[in-house]
Image (cartoon, rainbow, N blue to C red; front, top):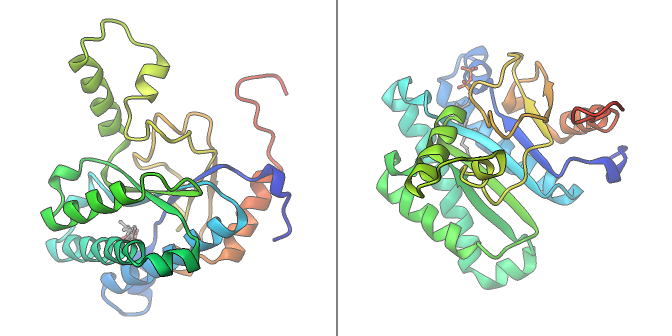
Length: 240
Ligand code: FPP
């Protein structure tokens, strides 16, 4: 990778868009795009891990995605189930864990009470088992919405009888309480919007949009995005 490693983002968010279009373009049902999208995600997560990114957040299922046909919703949850199960198996196989030295912590954001119960149980298991892994955090947005995240945080603060709140209170009540804000958000497939992804946390994130569809997104595309990121001047409201 030909980018300045010292200027890499600590936390990257991915809005993995374009799975459906990728499949439709090939005359295949949309679910093939999601399957390919899940495979691409594994490769990109590995790549991020290898180049030293510490946190990756991915938009796997939004609070609005329930409007899709049930078959597609079920299929996406199946992919999530397969992924989490695979991670759980890796984790219980101590030898494999030692060989891989991956140390991936799985984190989620979103209201998990609405997702299928067996997936919920698998997620609780992997979250508990990987809680002390500190090399890399994969934060998966499931039944997630940025506005819902803020409402969740405010309700949490109300329940704690807070009378007056500040920005730090909200940050630490969000689903991402233990995770720093994203430095860089990449959206694939051409649309130029955040679509309710990490609204509070993205206040100072650098945004990057590419026409490449998520199932076509490769490490070389990420390199290009990162090269662009490393040239940006992040001012955080300051003068230079
Ligand atoms: C957006 O493409 C993609 C989704 C709503 C689902 C993303 C899910 C995965 C990549 C798989 C599961 C994730 C994990 C963590 C294993 P779209 O369907 O909106 O595409 P379109 O805009 O072309 O229709």
